[in-house]
Amino acid sequence: MLIKVFEEKKDLGRAAAEQAASSIRSAIRESGRARIITATGASQFEFLEVLTEAADIDWRRVEMFHLDEYIGLPMSHPASFRRFLQERLIQKTGIIHYHLLDGDSDPSAAIRSTSEAIRAAPIDIAFVGIGENGHLAFNDPPADFETEEPYLIVNLDEACRLQQVGEGWFKNISETPKQAISMSIRQILKAKEILAVVPDSRKAKAVKACLEGEINPMAPASILRRHENTTVYLDKNSAALLTQTTLTFV
Image (cartoon, rainbow, N blue to C red):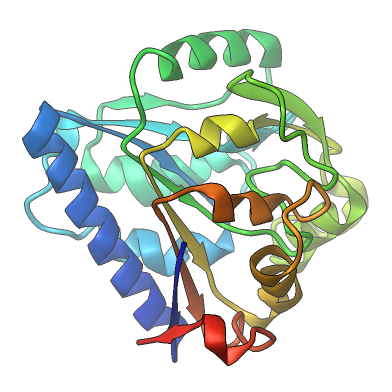
């Protein structure tokens, strides 16, 4: 694992997007297409803004999967991750091959169809974040490190739901869904490359637990340390609790 630390969140987002764009271009050159996994949430704003403006990416040759979606939340809701991806990635790039998780009408059917699609070929690069409780996608602690199913229905813990309130997606925790569809830990780790975008001081405790603590299901994103091609992008705030010996400042 490579950890890069930037002074400002906007610099982190720009550098991460440059690496992502390079990896997408390389995959298209080598195999004619790029299969990607895309994260959502407030931590991804700057990253996706720069990535969608990158030059020389033929987005028609990109196939996109996303990490998670709430169950029972319509796409019209501001917190819908399908809406997030439509507005911040799909509409901006003109990408035509994508798989959005419909957690509103029939979650089981969404899991079956998307699982079949993602199993069809390897994933070139996965863009992920780390939650305030250390979650990876919506795999809250204790996360399932063993299942081979690509997607599963998960229960969201209180810390995860409070994070969504704190980011402004919901007015209070009672409005926040209690379940979601999430890509599994093992499916994420099957990506050839993983790029984690993790800014802000509210992530500092989780970053320390996941990057310097034990690798275990109570710190789900700690499992990224077992992936041989992972780069974690931090800013000075999210990296504040890490020991200096683990860091590369940029």
